[in-house]
Image (tube, rainbow, N blue to C red):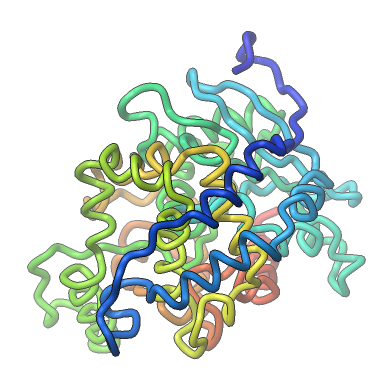
Length: 383
């Protein structure tokens, strides 16, 4: 951790070889559980599937290659609000580029945005309009990856993350900027609009989390939202168990995930199976397998399974009605996203709404060109 909280210290990812060797040994010596026949993914990740993916991670996946790719981008660490923060700061070659903060969620990381960095910072080189260029700030959230574990209860909350990131943008000298986020980032980004209203020009989100009251009456929702509402209620009953575990006793979960790479792999991959494009059969059909494993590797090498999960225990305002900041807000919805437009419009100054027929919850990895295009379009009038 830096000694002077005003320092912005250059950072490079350099995982010791001993950690790579340890990962490979643990994967080779995994103690595998049994499973029921013919249940597919309904009980969790099938053993046969995970064995194959773990073997690929051990023998074919090249961490050093991925590490070198990530190190092409300028990275830094600093301390804001007594919390260490790691971030990429990629400035555009275009002099009129607009600052944009990209915020991930769980079980993601800054790696989610890897395929969008070049098109967003240098649209001229990717067939786009140079007037759409952005300077990018891509942090690891408190408790995630190279931001390291949080040190105090409450520092993993989404609201606190927004305070940290607002201070980071000020420290970088950005007086006016945009914010984009998915998953937990779709909670943090509008919070930035609420707490840093004078400096946030616009907020863009993909698949924002809109949580109705648990006993919401479908008749009070527009007819075209009732199917989505039903899916949300089904998810709350059958698919949200992971959130309950992480929101109740994240420390207990951390022991297994920090000790077993196969356990960490299964815990994350299961979410990529069920939240990616439903037209894709397996997670690696929806996202690049190596990018997926780079994301998992970050959790493993930094031992942040437990600290990243604290976000669920400490973010106590999920589902609580919020006041709109008045900041112009845009939303992109992809397959698998369960976003209720009526709630989003009530809590935000919603001026832009897009729906796409491919991609999924991890849009930055699944359909980066669609998400990039929507971000460009939304911010075009707000620069």
